[in-house]
Amino acid sequence: MRLKGCWGNKMVYGYLRVSTEMQDENVQKIGVDKKAELLGLVIQDYIIDRGISGTKEPEKRELGRLLKLVKDGDIIIASELSRLGRNMYMVMRILEFCMKNNVKVITVKDNYELGDNIQSKVLAFAFGIAAEIERDLFSKRVKEGLARRKALGITLGRPHGSLSKKVKLTGKEKEIAELRSYGVSVSAIARKYDLDRLTVCRFMKRNGII
Figure 1 (cartoon, helix red, strand yellow):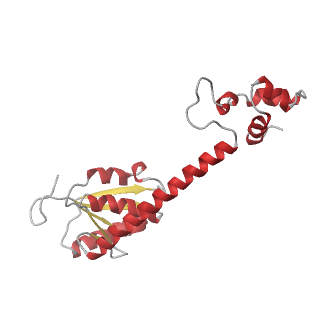
Figure 2 (cartoon, rainbow, N blue to C red; figure 1 turned 180 degrees about the horizontal axis):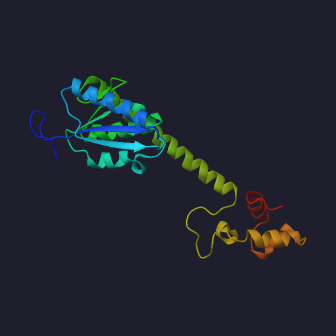
């Protein structure tokens, strides 16, 4: 149920990510409650991740459910930013989502507040820079991956008319190992599968076939 009155039609959520120890949960909850009280707010619902790593994507945590619940004007109070995620980029993505949806984020230990202020505007600029860097890195990784595939003799793109070299050998590991154990040469195996000898050598190396 959404709270109406002096805070308007909005919800105030407390978010906790805790270890399996109840003491840790209680300490965080006390801190969040006190912060809310200082701001003249009341926590209406607690969303808690128990015994789960902050390295997991929000969608695989209760935090993901919280991000689906929040609406324009809602407030999330957490113990500290690191409770949202274990790496900076993940935290920034979560804050960016909240900023775009006009959801205020407040933390206790960091004394951080994401809202309509200069700090948030600077952060928005940082979001843009981080996103641009991530796009560049992704593009670089894709190009490097394609180059590696080409070097391994794997057909790039959708095969035309026949299976790609990689698909031809997939599932043949045991058969190729047996042929080698009987003394069949790599060249003979390559002819058997209508492939280049080097392609077979690379496939054997990747799959630990002597």
